[in-house]
Image: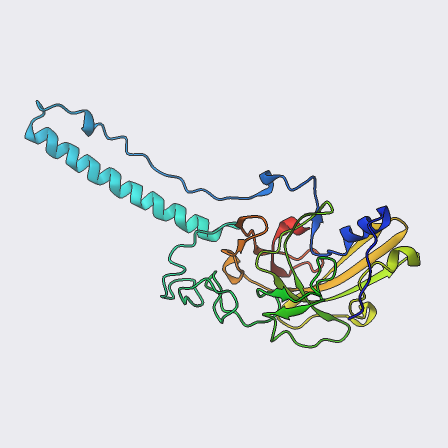
Length: 283
C-alpha cells in the first residue's frame, strides 16, 4: 500500500474532508440528529387508590374489575406500540436479543457482544462479508486511508476488479468531519482524483476507479463526487443490500459517538429501487 505524508496546510485539511467518502460534513455533530423512537405508555387513571374505608364490598369489586379492564387495555396498547417500533426505521427495541435463544426476527442469538464471531450483537448472522463489523490493527491504520493497516473481520469479502478492501469507521470532528459507521463496515473501495498534483497527491491511492464497475451480488455500488479547491474527488464503494431494518446491525453500539447506531434499511442514493444497510446521516 502506497503511503502519503499529510501536510497540515489549508489544502491538506480540505483533502481530509473528502478522503472519508462514507461520511458527511455537518455543523459539528448536533445531537439533535439522533433519531430515537419512544413507546407510548398508557397511564392507569383508576381512582381506586383514593377510595376510603367506607367503600362497600360491591364498590371494591367494581374497582377491581375496572383495574383489570384498564390493565388489559394497557397491555394491548403496549404490544401494539412495540410492533409499530419493530416495523419503523431508526432504532428498534432489542427485545430478547442477547438472551442466548433465537426468537422471532433474530437470525441467531449467542448471548454475547462479540461482533466478530458468527453472530453479531444485533442478533444477525455475520458472514464476514460486505457490511459486517471490522477493525483495523497495527501502526499503519489511519483515518485518511481506510484500506491501510491490518483489517480484521472481513475475511469473506471477495477480491474484486478495480477495488481495494477497506474498513470504514466512525469519526467525530476529525478536522471538521463526522462519520457514523458503528462497529466498522467491511467494504470494497476505489478513489480517483482529477486536478492539480498538489492536491491529488494527498489522496490515498486506492483501487482502480475506472475498472471498478460493480459490486458483489450482496451489495450495491455507491458513488460520491466532491470538489476540493480545483480538484474533483470521486469514490466508489459497496454497501450491503437489505429488505428490512432487521437485516442490518440495528443494535450496534458506537464507541466513538457513545450512542446506538442508526443503521437501517434505507434507499440507495445511487441506485433507485435498491435498499441497503447504512446510516443515512452519512449522506
